[in-house]
Image (cartoon, rainbow, N blue to C red):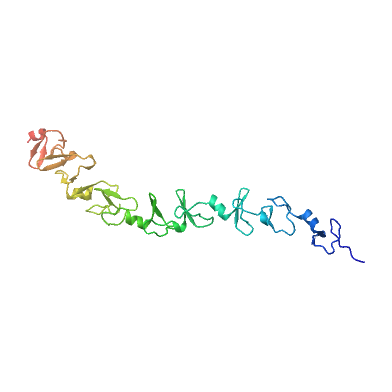
Length: 279
């Protein structure tokens, strides 16, 4: 007696017919497709047992239905991107959504090395120095209008040079007599003290700190013998070939200030009128 071998659903005999074995039992092809086949998300038809089925994010597709929304290219064996509800091949995605290199005007592919600056995008190998034509890569650069320079080229081409050491000034610095100086190079001609941010004066176009200028070139007070520089609002009195600070121009006897008053010279001394009348 022949053993029963029927479809678990329609109960028709499977002898001599194709069938698919499931956990519950064997199914004929029509019953299998009707009960277990998935529906294609694109064409809404069943994906039969003999069709290649593709699966993406809980959605099922016939192989011929899994295509780029823009160019209709099959995505079965191609890289693709999902944009909203649309499946796009890499070419269409890059053409529509990726940046274009401002140098070569080609698409900057997702995941490729690139540089972005001021709202523009370059392939890493396209972002080159306008002078030496070498890729700048991750190094520092300096923009100049529509050109971009690596730091060495910019300094060589544009940066001012220090009047003293002749090296380029990349930041800060001091301007003296319309000439640029490094702060550390702008020093007193006498004592070499840095003058940046300090009061200074000049003699024969050479800069001097107040102390050196006073010691070397300033008039000396006839009373205290210290330099009369005139800095800081300092005033002085001159008589013949002698000079005094305002606060040093006093009577040699009573020490009364003689600024704006009459006085009597007595050899190396100056006297007020009262003290001179007692002589």
